[in-house]
Image 1 (cartoon, each protein chain N blue to C red):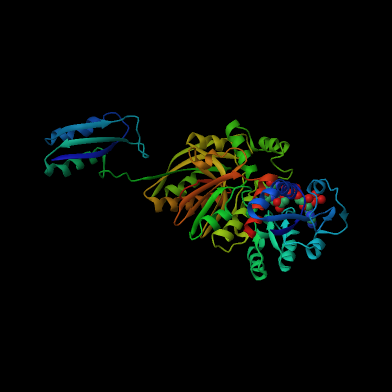
Image 2: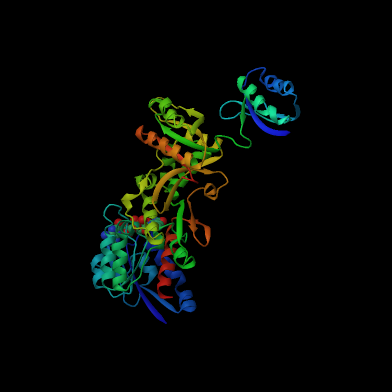
Length: 166
Length: 327
Ligand SMILES: NC(=O)c1ccc[n+]([C@@H]2O[C@H](COP(=O)([O-])OP(=O)(O)OC[C@H]3O[C@@H](n4cnc5c(N)ncnc54)[C@H](OP(=O)(O)O)[C@@H]3O)[C@@H](O)[C@H]2O)c1
């Protein structure tokens, strides 16, 4: 059986070999493999597109062996955090406990802050941050932004949202 | 030939701009539309100039006609005219003196055309109900977006459509400040002083930069063309004072600019700085231009842009309102 899938490797040496080894061990062949070392998922893993030829009965075993090595198989064509939104926060971002601001989103389980760039001018002046949030779907994204907006309001931060969608 | 006797109450930038426009366009309107528009009275804090046959506009502009010692209310109550143009300063707390001026004129069966946002943002229903009861027109295209057509565009050309939302840039001062900050990387306070010295921002800039002006315009649109019944103070407003050059740079790195946007749709009416993709039409508005995107159920999205302020620009909207009453 020919199977195309996307797997995610941790960014540590030997992971690629660790992924390919079990395929041969189980009597499979690699048809194609696309590997971009500089591409990263929001979770910091390296995504790899791979097509293999493998007896169907061995597929579960392959996935189990990968799992032991910390390699995850994404469900075909499905990335978990599909939606992405960029926002700006202005205010005393650090002094109002930046970690708890981020946690408000991360603790939802359906959304994460995947990128944050902070710019701090002089003391007493307000800082600015660019924040990228990812979420599992549109509804979840709306909810995550509502949560962050409440958190921002509570802390006296100005949140600037994109024009479309909110 | 139908005669239209007009008085102008509040003879400042816009009022005088209208007098200029009437002078320039009088003959054209006579020939093309069969309307004989005459300026029969002008009132200001200085007093009033009145001539039932029509003032000489050049003289009126220089206050060279006979100046009577009557105030604007007297002119409105006792004058002989068909239509009042109300162009006194806007007051967002009381709507006065325009609120009283407009009521007094409507109660006497006079049509009213105004560029004054305050009374409409505060007392929209009361004034439109009064106009309807008196069988008069109350028109206010100039209150939103200056020369940019939006209220009449929706009411006339999009008749039959339900308007789902309107969003846009309605304040030239804010747009100028944000554009300069983005393009030059300059701090807010520096660009504000620059705008003040250029006459783009007022000495007290709060009316513009705190989003009050945009909120008033949005309130008028929500009531007039979105079928909502909202008061000005129910709008959520955030202005541009807190925008930093850093925030603008962070946005730019991700392909966005920041603009002060007014947005109204069922259940939401808000003024706030928003992130606009660099290739969006709103992002292309530099300087003091206004733009609005109307979402209509049948027509889909429609975008208009134009000059949001200026004597002749506001007068253009007033003049079109006047003509539309008689056409
Ligand atoms: N300028 C624009 O581009 C623009 C665009 C759209 C809408 N608008 C609106 O149009 C209106 C007029 O604006 P503007 O720029 O022409 O203002 P302006 O230059 O300040 O003119 C206002 C005029 O009203 C007079 N006035 C003040 N109180 C009065 C009263 N109680 N009775 C009679 N006259 C009175 C003033 O007299 P004194 O000079 O003696 O004080 C002045 O002549 C405002 O509501 C404004 O928000 C303006």
